[in-house]
Image (cartoon, rainbow, N blue to C red; front, side, top):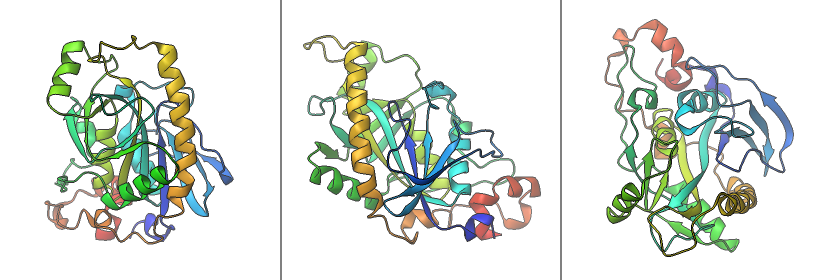
Length: 292
């Protein structure tokens, strides 16, 4: 068994652009967590929110110091799992690829298209232990439904479903790329979330994404050109909406991790146990502890 088996199941929040702290946390403390994959983006803020144990991690670091391609997603997700996190809500800023998704709307994507180029950094496995998790439905639908219902009840414009296309960045799309993604039927575009979804599934964490729209991606030319000031104002509004929604979502999450995502490794580990290198076992103990 791993040490995580003795921790109360908790909830993680990964904050995106504009969301660098969470209001209303009680009993808060900052934790420096080191992992076999290096350091997370920042110290993790521990506390109670809506009566639940919550861990908050700003994806880009406080003050937005880390570019999208520099985010150590493995360290971030491993650190959360090592603290007992079994549900994670990812808040992320995105551009809209479709007319119907306006700035300040919330999209809860159900699918991803991965156009990144950092495959080896999007898995915990390797070094002698092979795993192939199921990823046909990358988002936890039960958690997504809680978010959708809550956001709508608070008066926010929320769209459930759709495809998030993940590009490398840090530069935004060319107009040709943006138009291509739009014509392919993708819904929103961002630079970070697909790695988080893949790693959460390997870590047996139920994940859902709140994609907060800051602007129409550059395919849209009939409106006033997007300015940094417009995006910044939308970021502030989106962050305020997330802080409004999250406590009400958290209080509805079950106490016990018994959703399908919480056993996603049951049939995924391919390498026989007697062939697992001990060094790799130690590195992955927070994830594979129940198999030891």
